[in-house]
Image 1 (tube, chains in turn yellow, blue, orange, purple):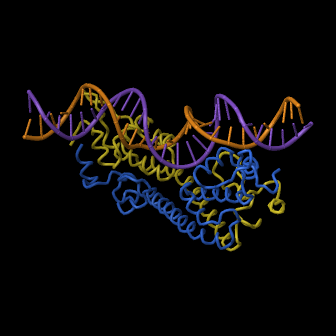
Image 2: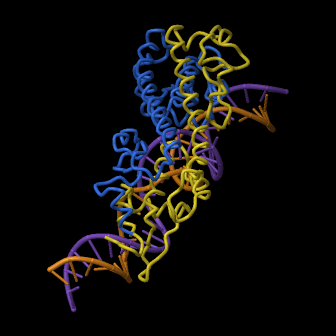
Image 3: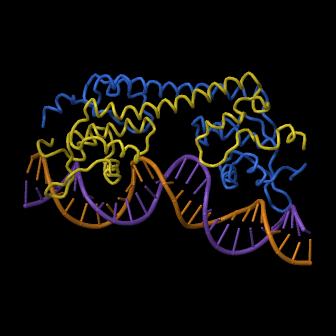
Length: 159
Length: 159
DNA sequence: GTAATTCCTAAACCTAACTTTAGCTCAAGC
DNA sequence: GCTTGAGCTAAAGTTAGGTTTAGGAATTAC
């Protein structure tokens, strides 16, 4: 087991459950910056165990690696984040998470409404309603339930 | 505009906001089964407008295309799903969705606890706690916050 | 009847987040 | 001191969910 001169990639992998290849990938993405020993092998700070954990948690929260890199830039290199460091980052986490939860709950509520309305065939279905298009996450124009200038009624009557 | 002999892929795209290429991709994935006209062009049922919408909604709910294909298999081909068809599918949606929301809320609550505890450095942090590993979505064994057989205390004391 | 659209297929390309492979070097144990 | 495991790099492969491109063929509009 490595002692004072930093830890090996294998040990870091063992402690975090990450694959060695994943850690090297994170380095390539600028999420961690190990130094090299005399033989050219990576050496990590012990604090990088937490750094890796932070990455895994942030991923669960739905952040991309570039976003996480942004967070990490505001973290001090080489040491454990303090309460203040973490509190700062938590704000971002919170709002992002709240938004995702809200979207899902809204979607679920609409689904509930649809069970009672015979859904997918009635223009008053909420999943069908234009005002809920805001819930979309995609980039292009996507119209749910085929709702367009032409009404469904028209469409149905044109066999 | 197509009349009695089914609708074209372009019209379906226009009505749903999907790209033509996406619709062809969905066909390749077995999510829709158009027939062909004399000239070899795809013709869709008008009900496929809703079928596409169903796919888009299910995607927003976080389902993968194979999962959605599963849902669609229980739908009647060629006609608008009835209230009963939809109710049957809604059950599945509900439970999946509830589970996803629960996971996120749990994660958020843990985050809240961490803001107060100085997180990422205390063994009593909930994000750090083994019992919350269940919240993981990945496939491999991943240990959050470096929690393994060896305790953090030990690790910290071995510089 | 001809020009402009739309549609066709197959194959290549794209992004994210990694893993796998190949061929080679380093470090550790006995 | 030698064998074995751990580490190295570069490049290619993987999965999901598509888009883009190339080169034709069918439809539609006038």
